[in-house]
Image 1 (cartoon, rainbow, N blue to C red):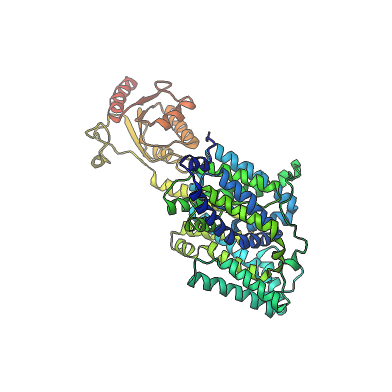
Image 2 (cartoon, rainbow, N blue to C red):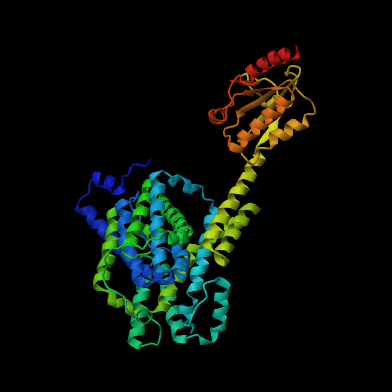
Length: 555
């Protein structure tokens, strides 16, 4: 079980002075400037009000830094959650989202507590890239209405009906709105190219807001869309819980936990590469769990580590979790004293920000690179991508991981072989040059050599090989030195093999069985010198025993 030891404890023990605090505070302010417009835009894209995104950045961002396992991780709302949050709110209301996020928080904490963080690295890259690119397409698609100023009462949630509705409303494009959106987009891209150190998102938002306010342009703003945004943090409370509601939102809760875990650990790995340290993956998951529970108590959104904000923190000089905590403090100051300024922000400018975010999420280069991979990888990538866009993110992840696992098993089964050639090498085991030779076998003795793990994908290979020998030996040697793993299906196959041998009157010798397979066989009652089954430490000993058993059997 994982010891609860947040990274901030380690950094404080190393020594922390005012100079460190000053450096972390400057980094925190820099990150807050980046996170402020982004948090609002992501909240609106998720179907919530912009203050929910800011609350999440404050509460969850602070708790991720306080209880997480990374020195420089910055957390908050991210693009990965947009699709699932939007769907949960549409189907179950905001109360349903709070409940799903709370359950996800518990899942993350338990996963970290029982040291499941290492399992995240086994999620195949085609699956991650596929659903991330799919999310990027959905985010970009969701912003077309605001970017073009289309007059639409209701925008369908599904991808194809949504675009059909866009085309139907295309004649209602507002030129002023498009101008504001394009202006914000050009500003962001120009600053990224010519002044990458400047906060492009915030500058674009400020300039667009000033232009709209001074010229009194007839464009939609946060103030017209959300006229009653509260200031300050709400009082903490718990979501309403019922077993019926829990059952309804449980699949979404697992999806939120899955995305939070992957994003957080990916971000932590990127941070490790930039600063040369190592994060604590299981502690990071526990910190993410606590942060999501805290976000729920204040009515916030799901949160996880944000790669772009974490990288900004590092580049700005952040050294400890205090930097991320200060980022939350600065955003809190804006909530307390600057909420009224949000009303002037044009929706088209926020759409421009989300277009840039979506492009960054798409990982275009990696997507194209995976398309050059073998057909199995391409199939997983495209299927996960297509299901994310056209069906549902939860379905896409489930199908993608399942298909990738099956394809991996199929590839692994191709590497496993069952051979019945033999010869004794200098060390009492098989020499590669002796494969196929059978002169050393005693009369009425047959031998099979398994090379590779025996799992459900290859469990029938040995039985097939036995059926093909065409004769009934008195003793069968099963060489297992090169079998590192035996699962339940493999054990069943060994049992069936032994039963078939017994029916033909043969005895079985298992040679050089490794610890894990030996333990699995013992669990099902297959022990040495019991009911015609014998174990030998090496192949030479197995041959000697086989010769004696064959002689006894013949007489």
